[in-house]
Length: 136
Image 1: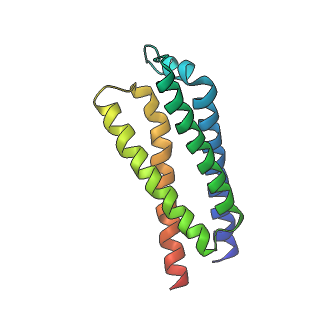
Image 2: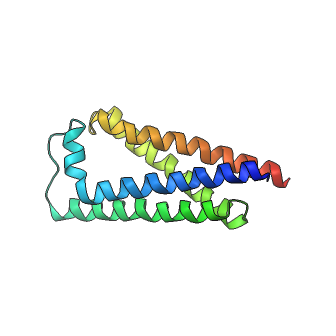
């Protein structure tokens, strides 16, 4: 991997880490405000909803940590494996979130966050493809 590509991937994964940590903190501490801001009515206050929201927030935060770790050494095989996991998660989120948004169950305004995940999924795919070609 060239130094230019290495620096590019480091910055890409660090920015992904910042995005995930920001989104995770937003979901954890200000989800209802965000939901109403983008056009939602109100958020259920049941403990089970809160539990799942917190779990999802922690998963998003944890993947921010994963992307930071990848950014530290994008050339390693473990980074490649973590990026595959990250890409799979992004595709699952895009699929589920997108389906609910298209059915009208999620405010369309939240599609902005989904769009960012689409961009990162494409970037992760490009990284995995480049890393595979570079090691072949």
